[in-house]
Length: 308
Image (tube, rainbow, N blue to C red; front, side, top):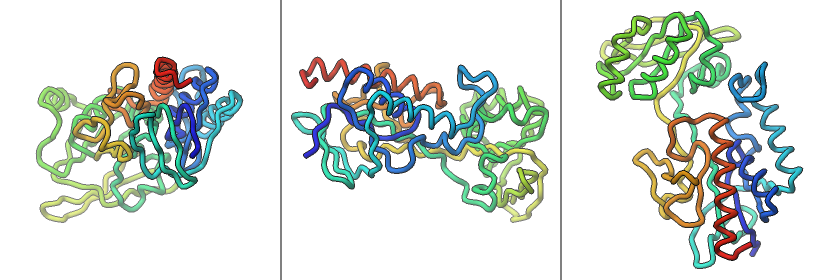
């Protein structure tokens, strides 16, 4: 059985940051990534708010540099799928496509995936007018009209955030009332830039090179109409990739891993970093911070347990 001091699951910004800090501290570390290192960030065409890049940077370019930096410090990155994580008296056993690995500590950096609408045009225009993050992409729509789909806190709060930037926000919700908390609703109803499209769902997202319009359908009458918008922000939920550890640690009611300020979960030696963790803000900058903290905390844990 392959034995490692630290195993990081997930190769997005949180995992790569953890790998940089752990490897630089001479912790015997391996990062397991089932796809291409970089996570969801590699599908982001342009990142404008990551510190240190005054003119912005491409998501793929940023992740390529993080991967190179991690490898320079000696991080081993394996392309494999992790099938299970179990707790033992001596640490953790991970079953992967390439065999079993015993680890003294584990960092979960598996991220979360936005829940998709599954409608025509969504995939084709992702990054070209379709977005799942107003904080990331709102500035690209300055002075324009955008749609926000959803009725919970995230959708309504992001709609209000967008009103600082855009000309108008069409908030589309399949019900006749919002699910957001009352105080959030009150602020939204008082915002003159938000127009509510009730009892409606998006059936299609259309455009040429970028988004130009959406087709919405009234769920009561099935009547459809076309709304001209320059962007569509989707907030119909997200799915944290926490299934590997759901039976051994505490999750919140949405499936996110609950941690303390040191990224420690309810299981000693098991840490979480990035979007899979319960947190206020899910951005590249917070993911890399989480990864750094998790790696330092894991190194201290391994030292205290005399596993280094």
